[in-house]
Length: 213
Ligand SMILES: [Cu+2]
Image (cartoon, rainbow, N blue to C red; front, side):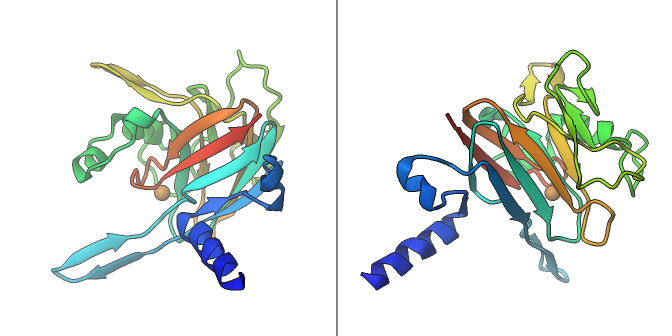
């Protein structure tokens, strides 16, 4: 019996399912989940450059709940909502990612390193969508003196490609590396459903969020 429990626990950990607490038995997901962004770079000269940056595979949260992402890596990341069909599945898809290019250009319009120009994208708008009254709250993960405004935004609008036209950008939040002033960011999930997101700097980092009713 005990061995079976250990095996199940190991399987959950290996699968990266986060948020399925003991309350999951009754179908209730937690109202707040904290997750780590993990991984590292490594290289072998003239052989390989490998990167293991990753989100949890699946995060489960109750409707109206929040997810706090904590960056445990030495590189910055974005949590960018995207339709499933636009998630890259090949190296070519990673290297040719028009949504990534558009999102990254909003964060760093001059291609700068260091602090981004904005802390989040809301419905395709920099910082906050003025037409969406979704009660964005200040994100305590962004210090008051930080030059850009950090908001806990409603994470509900996926980006998608748009034929030959410019891609449609939705919701995205950026997070700094270990040692930077902003290493954790929070989003709020108000509509039940299954959502996909990726990092537009490293589009092989891909995760799923399940928002329960
Ligand atoms: Cu990343």
